[in-house]
Every structure is written in C-alpha cells, then in structure tokens.
Length: 403
Image (cartoon, rainbow, N blue to C red; front, side, top):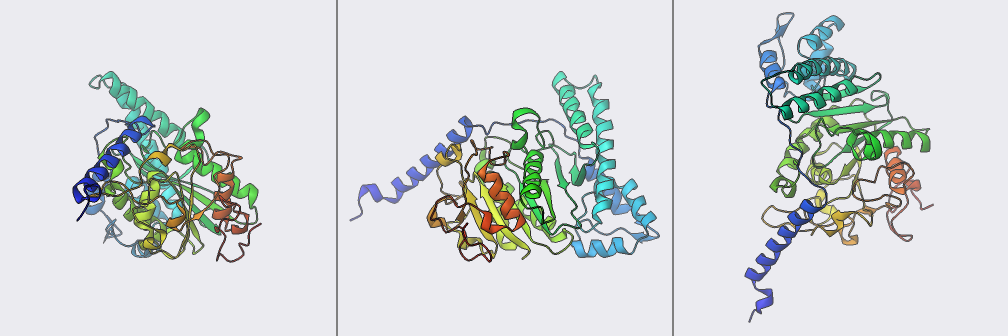
C-alpha cells in the first residue's frame, strides 16, 4: 500500500511549493524588473528595406542565410560596395553573421550614432511623458558612451530594450576567444555600469576577464566578447523560471560562434540565467567550444553534465554568499532549471570562487573566481584552482596536472 507521504498528489504539491519558493527568492534577492518604454522597431524597418535592395544589379542575400553563404557574398564585393552597404543598411550589416568583422564594427558605429540622434530628439519631444523623456536621455547617454574611442561592437539593435555585443581585443587574430553570456535584466541600459558595480554588468565582466587573461597569460592572444545579444527575462516573472528565452537565445549564441573568425578554441562564461542558455545550447555548439563555465547558476535544464551532450569541459562555481544557493534546483512542468551544477553528482568540474562576494561578484579583480576564468579562457588549465583541495576538476585535461 502506498503511504500518504509518497503519494503522487503530495509530491506534486511539494514541487509546486518549491516553485513558489523560487519566485519568492527571486523577488526578494535582486531580480527586480527593469522597465523600458521604446516601442519602435528600427531594425525591422531596416530589414524590410534590405529585402528590396540590391548591389550592382544583384539582390541582397537573406539575413538568415548561413554565415558561410553571407561570407561568400561579401567576398564577391569590392571594398567600396561593402562600404556602401554598411552606410545604407547599418542595422542589417552590423548584425550579419558572416560579414567581415571590421565592416560590422563600422556599420554598428553608424547605427549607434543614428540611434543617439533619435534619442536626443526624443529628449525634447513634448508628446512624451517625463518618464519617456528621461528614458530617452538615459539611452542617448548610453549610446554616447558606446561611441567612445576604441570601442568595437559586433552586434547592435536599439529596438525595444535593445541588444549589443562588444569585442575587446583583436578578434581576427586571437588564439582563443572568450564569450560572456549574462543573465536577467540585461539590455542596452544595463550593458555597462559605473561606480562600485562596474564588474557586475556584461561590459565590466568582459573588461575584467580580458585584463586578467592578458596579465596572467600574456603568451596567449585572447579576445573577449560581452555578448548581450539575446532577450533576457525582465526581472521577476515566469520568464525567469522558464527556458523559453534561453532556447531563443541559444539559437543566437550558436549562430555567433559559427561565424567567429579563425578556428581557435572558444570558451563560454555563463552567469546566472546565462547558464540556462548555455545548457540549452550545449549540444548544438560547434566543436571549437572547448569550455562552458557557469557561475551563480540556477541550473542548466539537465540532471547532470552528461545530458548536455557536449565534448566541452563543463565548469561550475558558486560563492558561499550567493543567494542563488537558496533557490530550489528542480524542474516541474517546465518551471525551474534542473540540478545544481556545483553538486558533485552533477559531474561538472567545480572550480573555486574564492574572493567573490555575492551573486554578481565573480568577475571582481583579484578574486580567485576571476583568476580561474582567465586560466580557462587562456587554456591554462593547470592554473585553475579546484573548489576542494582534493577536487577532481583537473582530471583528464591535457596539461592540467594539479599545481
């Protein structure tokens, strides 16, 4: 006879209660909503114009074409023709996987400048509410910062809350590439921060990682991408506990990696909800992805690392003061993201997060967490410090005997 304590009904209620706890934890620990009001879709208009366009009597290719086909198309154009397309369709060319990297940089700089002009006009638009004008002012200021000397963007879209991807280093000549995949409430206004929380935003994370890679492993030419080019959950809500946005973002991440120049190894550094996306994407990522490292993860939507079906090394870390530790690791009816990646039974290589403070402190300079990320990004696996002295995080990695 089945006891009451193990009945399916009680089990279901316990799972639902755990899901409720997830939402309470998120609501009280920082996943607050960030609301923005722009509703125009400038990239949609640009894509519609592109669809009707041509160059030298030839129709323009579909923006959804595979990267190799788009690369072939641009290779058949003259430098002047490529420049003409970037000027005429900056919001398209700047986001085309397969277009030359430097051309995308130029196109996105034009697109950012145009977006800033639009927002500066909105600041003084009497038809907008005071909140609307304040929002326009913040966006104009963000675009001004993005136009700073030496900044390079591989993607930019001002539509809605906005997307962007910034590159640090020489992407075309890099031996290895690191990609930062951030979590909830990432958009153009939260792309970067000033003050004490600089390294909690995607650009700050990328700058910290790039500096750590260069100082700790100068023999390796690296490039780092702050990849905020997917729609993230906006604070508390069902989206934060579901995988829908992660699934859509995974498609975009796969397309990015497919189109990266060169053939060197790629390492992914996935924070918070970004680790959900990386878990969903894992089995479709190109073979050049050698490392998937997650920090502050609510789960990767699998029960163990083997279910990711990837040949990449899977790393995990969590600071003892990270509130994500108190979020139940479960999946029920699509809610929740599965097992805890730092649980020994999960099967990830658990690296030390020493020095990190809280959920957003993993990329702070001087922390063991950042040093470990830099070692992974540079392929210097022997320099990674395991979470436990006898931890197996170095096992079966070439050249990674414990130090």
